Amino acid sequence: MAIFTDPINEYADFAPGDAEWLHLLVGDWQLIADLAFADLALWLPTPDGSYVALAHVRPSTTHTVFHSDFVGERIRADLLPLADAARRSQVIERSSESDWTTEMAMRVEAVPMVRNGRTLAVLTSHMDLSSSRMPSRLELTYRQCAYDLLHMGTLGLWPDFASPTGSRRGAPRVGDGLIRLDAEGIVEYASPNGVSAFRRLGDVESLEGRSLAEITTALLKDRRMVDETLPLVVTGRMPWRTELESRGVTLSLRAIPLRNQHERFGALVLCRDVSELRRREMELVTKDATIREIHHRVKNNLQTVAALLRMQSRRMVSEEAKQGLEQAMRRVATIAMVHETLSQGLAQNVDFDELIGRQFRLSAEVASESQTVATQRSGEFGELPSEFATPLALVINELVTNAVEHGLKGRKGNVWLTARRGNGGNGREQLRVTVEDDGVGLADTQGGEGLGLQIVRTLVTSELGGTIEWTSREGGGTRVGIELNLDPQRLR
Image (cartoon, rainbow, N blue to C red):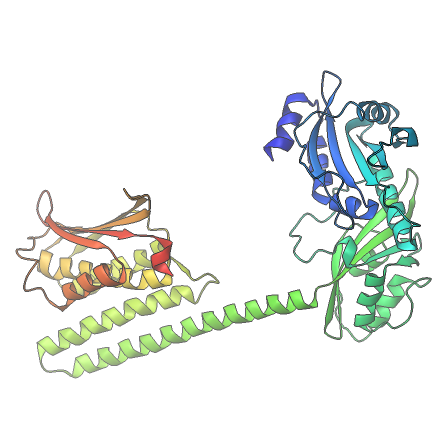
């Protein structure tokens, strides 16, 4: 939004809230362009007596009259007198027929956007009349609605800070359906799409001449719970959004009260059938819940397997067999911990720092039955995809266990875990992990390695696509360094 904000910061002498008010206007003026069947441009006065274009919007209900973008440019000489007149008078000014060119008959209106008695900017409306015909009732009603909203802009009554500012997903638009109400909430006009929307809800009569509040009450007579904002929306009293659901059909409703200096004289209600959108959202929620439940059940099953391995190890007479089952139990428990993390969120990514923080301490404690081992962790792993987190957790578990059981060999010592994320030499993000101990060191890690180190080497090179290196640690002990490529293509 630099093109929008930079001129304001450079030229404007705005009071608190003025810039935000213009942002609200630009955020919602597609409504005006569609109702007016016209392009809209917003012009900010400059100290040299000219204007600079802050924003431009094209209508979706007709063709545009400006195919090129002029945002950031100065106003044309032929528009300058009209913009000046509107700025001074603070009323809507319209061009005369003498201003029409031979190429195009265009009606131009200049609308001063006034807040707290000050003209902050001038909005120009450009409507092509060269292909005009006898306007229909819909077009006449739309243009009147656009005029009423623009007139409210000259009074500082629109846009309204009380208007919805949250997500616009599913928000109704002019083409989805428009209903105009009088001050009492009686329908003065309903567009064909608006009538069709309420027919899908079950109302088969004409909407015009009836109270929209009574119509919705009849449609919801069998509902026990109703959104408390609904009465204020369907009567047009507040500029809010709500939803109306009946017979499996969901309508999104948005009300825009119409006011003058003295009173509220009517309202616009935009409506949109969002049944399919809500159904898809519900499917996504259901799928997310199903995925979380699957992870939860996998975690429970893996914990059951780990418990069975533990029971079996207690019955073994051979010490070697008992240790083998206990190591298998720890590996299964590590995978279960990843699925437990996945079962608690919607994303398929794992907060690996939280996961490995628990796993790191647990691995050292389980492996150190008779000695005191201190663990220290530094750096951040960040979020990792589940298909990356599971093998990496297993690798770290094996390396920590190996450091305690073989590096320290029953003596008191320390194990360090360090993680660093950054850009590698190939421009891709890389993760560097080191596991260190201050034990006796490993004499020959390249040959005669046990099952645990074989698992580590296989997971790092095959599953994670990385490299691993064993070196002596300065000051004694062993340092194991792992470099992993976080290329998203490899993580799909």
